[in-house]
Length: 68
Image (cartoon, rainbow, N blue to C red):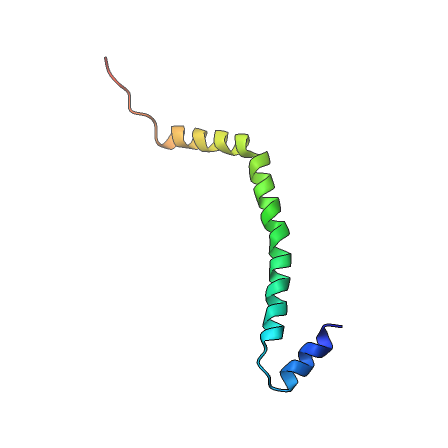
């Protein structure tokens, strides 16, 4: 349904704005669910991520000890 008009548009030598617009739309539709899943995973595992970062920071960059 979409393939024929795009092939016809490209075969006639007209600018491929319709084809590039369709490709851009497909990329947006494909990328948005992945972005939502990544954000949801980050907020779901935020406490665990923060604990691991704090442990790593304390191990490799210990706080300076105050003598006195």
